[in-house]
Amino acid sequence: ADESSLTDALTGLYTRKYLDMVLEKYTRLEKKLFCCIMMDVDHFKQINDSFGHLVGDSVLKDVAQVARGCMREMDTVCRYGGEEFVVLMPGSLLEQAEQAAERIRRAVSGAVRGPDGQPVTVSLGCSEYEKHEDALRVLHRADKALYGAKRAGRNRVWVARRSPVIAGNAGSGGR
Image (cartoon, rainbow, N blue to C red):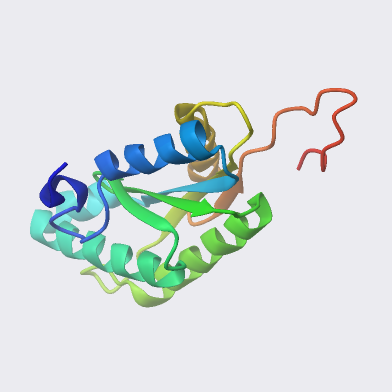
C-alpha cells in the first residue's frame, strides 16, 4: 500500500487501513497479547457546528499530537475516522491500557483548548485481546466501553470486562 493511504493527512497519525494491517498481524499471525484503546473527542459536533471545520480540524490535530505524545514508540496511534482515534498497545495488559488512557485523558484536558477557551475533553474505552477472538471483536469491545464512558457523562475512561472465565481455566478474574 502506498504511504499516503497509511498516514492521515490532517493529524499525521496512522489511518484505519494501517490499523487493520496491524490488527491482522497481531491477531492472525502472531497471536500476541495487546490492548486496544478507543477514544472520541467529546462534543466535537458542537465545535464544528459553532466554529467551523477549520477550527474543528485544528482541535483534532492538537488532540492527536497530545495522544501520540502520551504513548510509547511501539504503540500504534490511528485516526479511526472523524473524531475517533484508536491506539493499539502490544504486550500490554488491560491495567496498563487503562493507565495510558487516563494519561491521555488528563493530558488532553490539560493541554487542548477549544476556540472558546474551554478545555477539550475525550472519552476512552479499553479492551484486552483475548486469544482466538478476531480483530473486530477487540475493537467492538473497546467501542462499547467508550460508549459507556460517553453515557456516564464523558471525559472518563471505561474498561471492557473480560469474557467470563471458563471453569478450569485459571484467569485473573473479571473486573
